[in-house]
Image 1 (cartoon, rainbow, N blue to C red):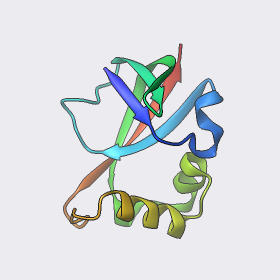
Image 2 (image 1 turned 135 degrees about the vertical axis):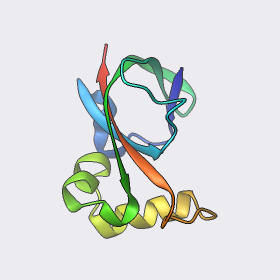
Image 3 (image 1 turned 180 degrees about the vertical axis):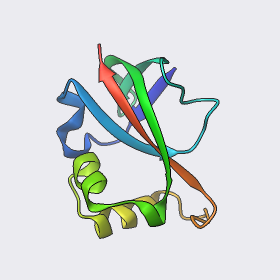
Length: 102
């Protein structure tokens, strides 16, 4: 499975472990899943999904926003809303996915 990043938010792809916020998709993102991490569709490294925590956008906090993206809570929410303009985030779950680099 591939997980693509369009941008190396907070320079996280250079860390041994990092998070990514994705749309909830239990058939795609599973604990123990091995994955190819790509940056702008080019291979970056191998990884493994270690843990997943699901949440609603309204429950996103400054701690997660800053660690995951390097941006404030408000800026991070705005980024997510711009990326997924057509989704209703009162119903849409998100997943905070913990990845370990291999």
